[in-house]
Length: 139
Image (cartoon, rainbow, N blue to C red; front, side, top):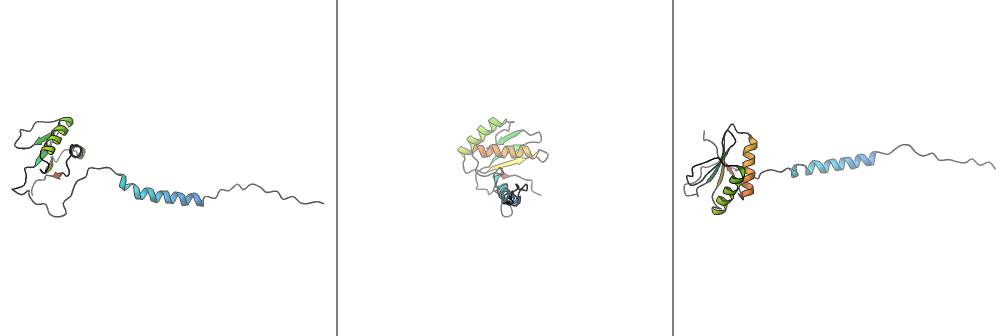
């Protein structure tokens, strides 16, 4: 009675095909959701040629960044003095609250870094500005 015993050896291979499938699904999910997660300042861009502000429109509140990165506020012929970020935030919030329909405009110097203009737009968003326009020189 010699029976030949069959011994099973453990298989040393790993099937990686299911892991590749899972990785591809995760890659697609991240590729779709990554652009949606980027944070930024909301700016309403015009869909047509820009027109000058009408004469009967409310006076705009103009926030300026000069070539050295200092912030200024101009409204009702105020004498502009340099403001730090906290003071600018408080003054902007008060002006926007007092004049909710007044256009909010940003005037940035050509040589100032993009970071300073974006920081100003973030401060205006925190102050309650619904939309922000950018001033340019007419050509």
